[in-house]
Image (tube, rainbow, N blue to C red; front, side):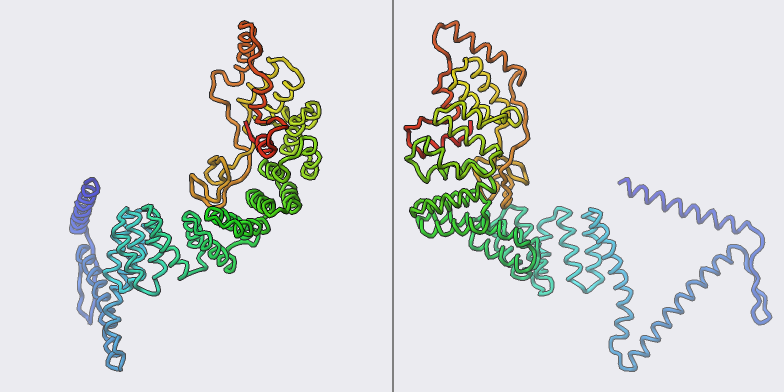
Length: 501
């Protein structure tokens, strides 16, 4: 409405300006005198302006007539398309002008204007490959999905634009959540143009979501051959797919193939912790403890992790705590200053009830890099050495506010996972889970850390008021740290020793 009013005002203003100009010229003196073959012609100011305009129109018409004569002569000399080219030239100019304006509108985010210009270009040009592409993208931008899909289907019928059409429909199906159809279209688009990096990435992610690990490994191999992936990235992702394939084989009950697949995954990427654990489990089941120990020690030297320690404990499930400390030296000798190594050694000594050695192993970790696990281990050490309830409860209360330590976190959406998976459960990204510490946030409790002395004091007062024993016993601390008695099953012992609070 406002734009129409502006156009009406502009039109009225232009007419008024022309009328004022004509009146001004009529009242003006002078003019132009032209002598032709001895005859003199005099023109007033207004007549002079009109004569100039008429002359310009005459010259333009003369040039058009001359161009038409040239095209006619070419046609008479055997050029059968000369006349058609002459008459189509103006249409093409209008069509390409509309196409350029449509592309500018598309780049500016003006979907409706781009769609209108695309329709105009289609009217003047006989180039559906260009106009249909502009129409489809303009319809998408304008929110007209039906028009966009209809136009993309037209592009599919032309061999030159088939890939563009298939890819366009694939993106529409992804936006609609129809991953089944999108997967088939992605396979078709990737077959048409295997060097297209984006299509390969979409296909790989869809195959991983559908747990088509074999197909995903083929896609990954094709991307490597086309130079779309560095070799080290390919090895890592191929190991992730091989590990996922091994897990699926386990679910099917074929343990032999699963072991081989897990070992292959670990060979491809020794730093992939789940692959190392599964491969070691396979060696243990095949009664090859040395192979399992060597594999886990290598993985630990790259990236210490509680799951590796648990798998290492499972190699000899019936050993005593002292024997376990001696055997674990093969693991803990690498990266001795790593927090995971120090906490592991401390847990082993706690299980052996050697609390001074456990304290020495833990060192200053609770001061420099405190986590819920290391702080709770310190509570167990204090209880084992006979410290008061206030000291023990102080450590346990502090465990509520410090970091939980490293966890499986998605690099893309930062979602935390309880265990490693090849696909992020939140954003569906492939191979984005990393073992790292999330940002520390204060616990949502009144007063946060400042409340801890009050909590500890209240606990101590309550225990004395009742006249009973202390509220926390060594069993409570062991439950908190999940450390079991040495006489328990050793496998459970190691798993509990590695668990977090």
